[in-house]
Figure 1 (cartoon, rainbow, N blue to C red):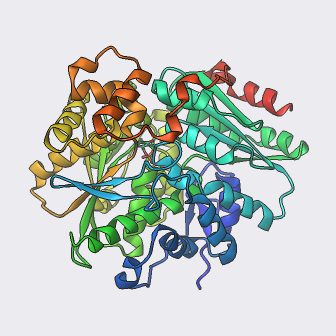
Figure 2: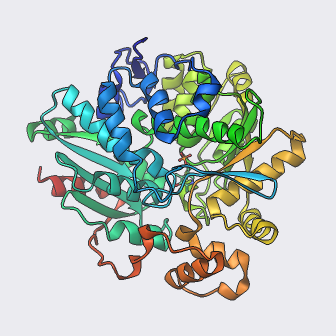
Figure 3: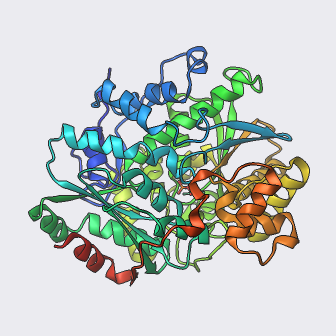
Length: 496
Ligand SMILES: *Cc1c(COP(=O)(O)O)cnc(C)c1O
């Protein structure tokens, strides 16, 4: 098999194998690791259709992780996609009315981040072993709400690791906050910051590339890594469910083998949709990747104009996991559509840092044709929840609602009737106030925990185990800091 190497998007030409890219998280030059080529999947659809999630995960992931032992990879997949998920299907594709939803929230923390973060700790453990690293791994994580809990759940009590999560104190849902603050495990730390997700992510990226800090860690036998989607180990497992959605559609007789489909993806940091782009490059018949934004619509503007401009007000919306103005993984797409021109990417990223914006050239704009950018206002989002419930009795969360609303706009605008999968990224149980009030005004004013019970009554389903006793779990993390104090907190936790 052809060995796949990884290199930085910003010009550091050193090639590394996947284990090193995963262990490091971010390249020394601040760039993101990208595969030097996207492997083509040379397996017939007939064969792929027969595979369950784990088999498919192995088939796809081994194409990217060519330096991993197959035995280790198989074992990691077995451990990651086990009974933690509330269905053996792992990522069910369901049809309600005329719409297809890919439910990616059946893992322990009820959001799609579990799809990758349940396996990342194993990938990292194997990487550390392969590279003979005898240091404690310190996993730095910024979260807009869902990554934090999923990373905590994945890394809690994993030997040889510490996991530190920063979240925007005022920018996550009550349930998301409570999920994180009640996390047990001696190696876990959760810190609220007086700032937004971009502040948290910038702080984390800065520390990951701060030479003197890295040196001090090294002196103390520690090393940084990241659980954010800047880590390529987050993206690769996400490619799997695009294929799985496709094979489920085939197996249900909804599409013919080989037929093109669209995916509509609620997007923030551009990690989920980028995995879809990689799936397309591997050979999956995808026509359009519809990028759905909320009112923080930097990506909508970018896809439609070629100018990325983060200089604007940050809006706190009912889909907080997408409240982001700096979409890190877009850098990996820019790399791909610039003909892998790393000096150009470095230039664009420097501009973003300095001026808060950049514009891509016409060639690159032309290469954006695989994407369609749309956005949903808060009103559109609420109406989408109402409409789906009224017509099909199916309850979707606020992020999925953004995706649904954008897909409906896409239909009207393009009249493209290609079958489209609405990627469903969170359980409605995580965002009950906005979900329930869109369904019926009688729920307005009830607290999140009361609403969990009401939602369970409404759907006649049990409350998901992940949040069942959340209200009564003790709060274990109480630290809050200013956004420029993140490093001080790290120094305190690590005793350096
Ligand atoms: C993280 C998240 C998103 C955005 O995904 P990206 O990979 O950051 O684009 C959307 N919805 C939910 C529920 C999320 O947790």
